[in-house]
Image 1 (cartoon, rainbow, N blue to C red):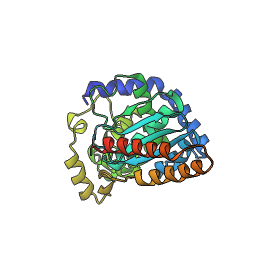
Image 2 (image 1 turned 180 degrees about the vertical axis):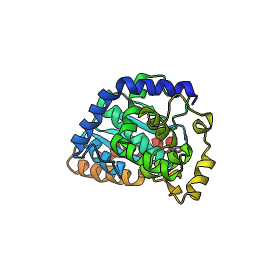
Image 3 (image 1 turned 90 degrees about the vertical axis):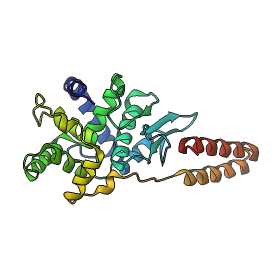
Image 4 (image 1 turned 45 degrees about the vertical axis):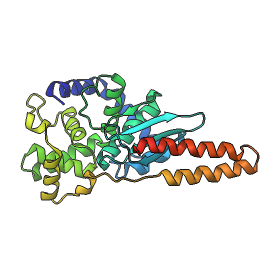
Length: 267
């Protein structure tokens, strides 16, 4: 991402922050949470809320590491499939991004969560989903306090401040950096290329040197597929007994599921 793109993101945030803040508070209210507190386990909070809206959240490793999540709705349920080939911090951002699409845009997306793709911010709905995700993962009151604390611990070093915030909120580097500038914490007129382009190896190295949890930089590789297939088979056999479905139809459903799973994993 270049500096001008970052400035466009900050400008979008300044114009739309008030409206997005109301949406974030609306979600917190729906989830029974206090919007002044950070969410310590975003998946645990978001998953039930999405289920109430008719969406199941599944985790599985994708062959394509550019895609953070797939979101689509069938005739009955909707599905959000998170790519566990990506680091945990990226998956956390992806689920918040998809939550916005489910609650507020009603569209179906293939979501990229690296925040560095050249065309990622070209669509307003993507700007909005990313702003929502950042505000949900990195709530303003808490974030301002922790920024000041970690800046002091880092002796003013911006990179180390961002890395400490990454660890605390389990959020991607670029999402944290953007949030810092959205809230006007550093000087937006003095953005350095060094801060903008920090490679993953350097981030990991600093995590280790600062005694942070570098595991959040790793892919979990969690795979929910077999659990989901067992659930489908169980309900399928119940439907067969009640004569809502026959064995051939259930077999076809399982076959299609396995084919899709194979395509996603790249087998």
